Length: 457
Image (cartoon, rainbow, N blue to C red):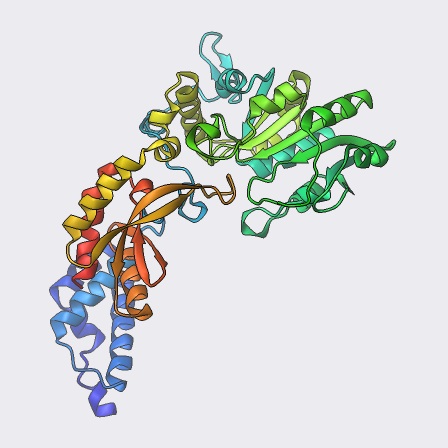
C-alpha cells in the first residue's frame, strides 16, 4: 500500500503546476499549500479504497479549486425554488429593488444618519423612520430596533420597574420562536416577572382579572403567528384586554410577531391582525418584525403611545439594539411602498403571494420544456412560511424531476445546492420539486441552466 501512495506527487510538485502557482500569488502561499495537502490526503483515502491513480494536472486543478473555494464568502445568494415564500433559513424576505438602491445610496458614502441638516447639529437616527411608521400603523410615535425579540426586550426592560414588574400573559401564548428562543426567556431577561393565566387552549377575561395585583405592570398578548391551536379553544379579544388594562391603570402590550400591513383575506389566506388593528383596539404599544410579512430588512418595530416610545428611546438598551444606516434606509424604502399603495407590485413577498396561478403555470411549463425529458408539471402548494400564517398555503404548479432512488435524488439536490448560483429545491414523494412562485422571474434562465447542468453531471 505504501508503494501505491508513492505514486502520488509531492506537495512541492503540485505547487509547481500552473494553477497552483497562480493560486499562491493571488491567495498566498499558506492557503495554496494547505489546499494541496488537503487534496492529497483525499487522494490517499481514494487509493486505499481501490480508486484509480489521477494525473498530476488534475490534482493541481482540484487543489486550486479547493484553495479558491476556501476563501469564498460563506454567505452566498441562493435561488429559492422550495415554494416557501418567507424562508427563515434562506434569509426570510427578499428586498425590493428600491430598498436595495436605498441601501447602496447611504452605504457608498456618508449620510445624515445622526445629523440634522437644516439646523447643522446632531440629530437622531430614530427620526428617519418614525413619520412613515406612524402613517402605516396609526400610532402616535414609533421606534425600530434590530429584530422583534429586541423590540420585546427593550419594551419590557424600559417599562417594568422594581415592585411593578409583573406582566400577565395567557399560557397559550408562551411561544417558542426560531432557534429555540422562547418568549418567556426573552421576558425574563428584561427583568419582567411572568404571570401565566388560563390554560393552553382556553383563557378568559376573568383569568386576567384574577391575576392583577399591586405588582402588575402590564397585560400582554403574543399573537400565535407561527402555530395554530384548533378545536376547543377560547381567547380574549384585544379590545376587551384594553378595557381591563386601562380600567386598572395598566399597560396593554401586543406582540404581533410577523407584522402584516395588508389584508391577507384578499389573497385567499386567513385574516392576520395588523398593527393598525391593534392600535385601534387600544394597545398602548405594538411590536412586530420587519423581515416577515412586512417584506423588509431584519428589524423590530415598536409603535404606540408617544410618552412610552420616548421612554424606550432614552433606555440604555436602545443603543445596543439600534438599527444600522443600511437597514434604516431599506426599511424606509419598504414602508414607502405601502404608503404609496404599491406593495403588492414592488415588495417581493407580496408579489409572490399575489402572483396568479396562471402565471405560475406558464413559467412551470416553460421550465419543464427547457429542462427536457424527465421534467413534468404537477399541482402543488406554496407555503407562506417564516413564522407567518401557520399552515397557510397557495395553489401552485411545480416542476417535478424523477430520479432513480432516494440516494440519486439527494445527490441531485446537493449538486443544485453547491452549484453557482446555489439552487435550493425540495424532495417530496420520491421527486425533486421546483416551485416558480418563490423564484424571481429574472432568475428563470439561470435556474434552468443550473438544473440542466446538475442533471448532466
